[in-house]
Length: 105
Image (tube, rainbow, N blue to C red):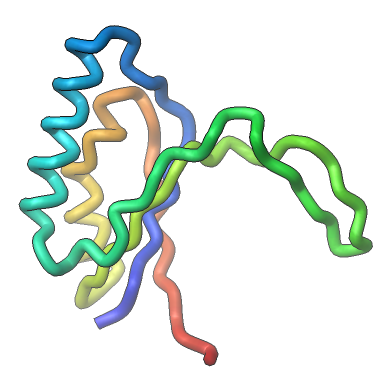
C-alpha cells in the first residue's frame, strides 16, 4: 500500500447555494465510497494566494494551475487512478493528476 496525492487543476466553484449543496453532496458520497482509502480529503486552494520559490531563493507571487488536493491510500497507481475517476472535482471541469508518494523519513 502506498499513498497517492490527487492534484486538482482548473475547474470552477459552484455559483449558487443550490449548486454548492449538490457539489457537497457529491463530495460526501465519493468520500464515503472511498472509506478507509481516503487518508486526507484535502481542500481547495485559495485562488491567488500562492507564492513560488525558485531554486536560487527568489520568490514571486502566484503559482501553477493547481486548485486543490486529496490523499488516498491504494495498492497501486492504477487503483488510485480508478478511485480518482469518481472525484466530483471532474464535474466542475477540473482535471486530476495522480502522484504516488514514498516515505523518506
